[in-house]
Amino acid sequence: MRIPSQEHPGWMKAIRGDLTGRFEYLATKIMVGRLNVLYRLNPSEDTARRCISEIREFFVNCPDLPKVRHDLVVIEGVSSAD
Amino acid sequence: MLTNIDGLFSKDVVSQLIGEGRRLLLSGEASLLRELPKGSWIGGSIPYFLTAQGGLKTQDKIFVRELPSFTQSVKVQVYDKNTLEGVYHDAPRSGFSFMILPGFSEVHSFFALRAPELSGFGTRPLLGWVSGFSLEGEATEALVFDGTTGSAFTNRAVVCHVELPVHKVVDINIVNLFEQGDGDVIVFPEDGFQITWAEINGERCRFSDYLLARKVDTKLPLVSDLQGVSLNTSFKQVDASQGVVSLFAPVYQGFEYRLARPVGDYVAEFEKRVADINGDELFFSCNCVLNYLYAGLEGRKTGLFRGPATFGEIAYQLLNQTLVYLTIS
Image (cartoon, rainbow over all chains, first blue to last red; front, side, top):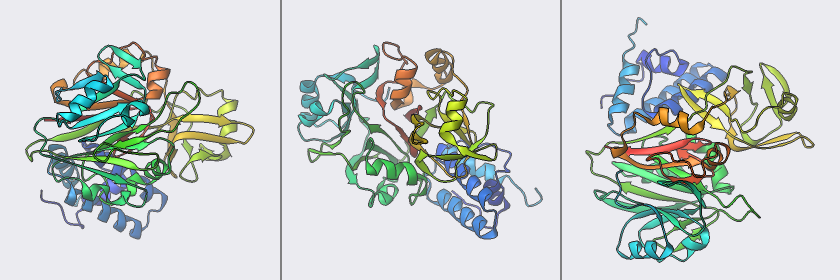
């Protein structure tokens, strides 16, 4: 799977809980939901960096499953202008 | 169903299956599991089951689920709270990991609190259940078993890492009939199983006082919503004299909880929710013993969703009052 770079704006949208699409893979939902809470409690640049690193690492190491690919599309579907 | 052997069997029959070299996931009374021969199996203690004949409590039979015939390899590993960090790294590249935790143990508490922070969280399918005991009479110890060594543990997680062909698609999912009600937003100041204080709509109060003043039905869980997934935390006890509320799973700091909306008839609602699930791809499921008890599932059928009724369910993290299932396609 091709994983977007750390700078892709979709990661930040995911961390803030601002994505419009819905995730399908249960582990993605649990992980991103937890990171949403972490960021809401401490919305600093450092928190954002750590959360993005964690979620990106998750996708790097996930198996290549249809639901995982779908979730990446949800994140990648965000353009810089969003 | 993706299994050759599935259902309740006598200890003698299970011994025979193990002798034939079959690879088994077992659940049953601890005294029965202790007498089984060594072989390719893991198990956990529990006397409650959802079977083809309906919900059933039995201390005379063992529930058996045989791993699919296309299983390529099986590796059983035992973890304590210090080694559990490696569970995702030990998992096969293709397949799943099946974990049984002994209820009310230190490793159970550790996993409940820290599962989402384990290295590699969610990068391999991890499911399973929490072992227990009969809720009638005196409480006994919850046990897990590593059949490959014939060992029983009260404070270790036993995990069966199952390798499948790379073209197989494994998916873990849940059926949770509970969802957040329309009531107060409840936030807790720290993680834990034992709660004294909470913020209710932003106002700090003693949580036990809140529950008692409103005569809250504690058969209904607290529910958090993570990206559209409702995750339950069930009540164990409300101790008014000590001002402490005990839970079957931890709450997490900062998460927003609400009390669950009541469910009508569990079985009728359940049937609606599972109608679209392809039974041919179903390999394993377990449901919560609290659903078994509170929804009166004894003698009632839940279709193909058969397996142990457990003291906690695992779908990457600990869950309560939830059905967890695994499909392979």
